[in-house]
Image (tube, rainbow, N blue to C red; front, side, top):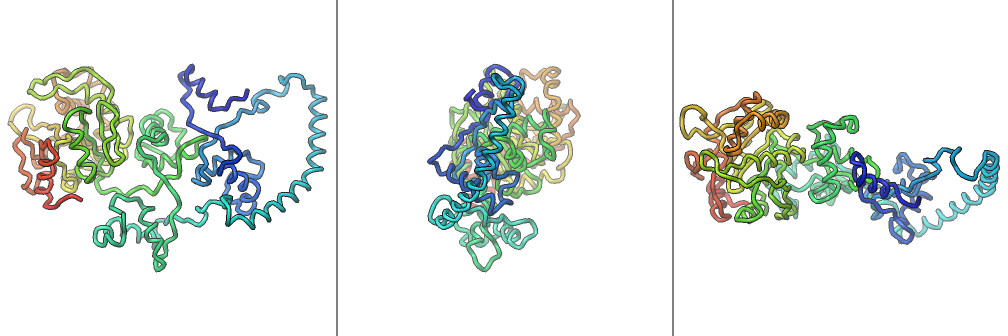
Length: 500
């Protein structure tokens, strides 16, 4: 009887498959800073600032107030647990030892007591309010600082100034934006501008977009990868093209969520790219990927990115790998390369469940030892954006089966990815793929499913195809460069600059 709603749900999750695990929660107790914030909000805050407590009244439960403060990021409040109210769950005629006459008598007593004490309680609360207002500036009972914040709205002068800083100013006048890069958030830039009294920018509101490793991130990923398709009515106004920040805003409405208000979504280039690499947990590739993360080059200069491996690995700079489920040992394909199709089938399922690919115009799979020049790649893909297309990139030979898509770089439109995910089981059943490399499988599968292909012989400079000349000024990818030293030598030669 004394168990929380979440404790009961956790028990049901273990025994009833249709019941998902509950989110983590903790109800604040007396003596904690959050508890003091709740007390002030219930007794004074909601009277002075009712608009700040939308949907609440002074009669709302402490848990309701704690949930509101948690979503606002105020008072160090965590998401509260829900107490189980048996009086609400149990029909009145089933309550033991209580007759109708006794219930009416008890209700009458409560009403009399309420009338006698209401005036006394209200007078005491007014005295408490006056006393606490005198001390509010000196204690932690102050209402959230966020009341004075305002994230710039689209079309405002501040919004335009922030965009200038993100797109141009940070490159032309980096000293104006100390500590920021073109990957910093909208709110980070606005916070800098708010310090300049000559600009009409207020301090931005507190925000936090969920990152990998957080419970909120997993919840958002589930919605994007599964929830939107299996339970669309739960998420009105959202679609597979919704940004993760929009999904997080919706998840914020759920009870006991660990999510906070997300930051303003970052600006994406055109066409937008979701890029990922796959590498083993053992071997040279991890160090190579770490070096790219630290300099934000290669796939890490795409609009969004992911890394996949056979284990969950902390890479660098907050990047953690998504794990590919284990499968059979890789053999050798008929062309002498790895017969790794089954591994990549599993990897594509991870990408589907992650869900972010659906936000972008293109999904790019690049090998870790492929030197990727993102601006060139965008230019080459732009003419094919919006079509059900994948790119073939190698004409090593002429004849049947050529050109082909070589796996150092694979480029698929969002429409082509949707085609693959809808028909992947059919490809696995109908194609004789067991001796193929994954790039051959993907090309044959999409051909069979009705996607179109375009050939661009300048897309890659690959020693496995026709050779790699990092100084050709044309290719978007050069491959293979298996050490950080040779990788960055090629990168500098291709871009004529040292990445910072």
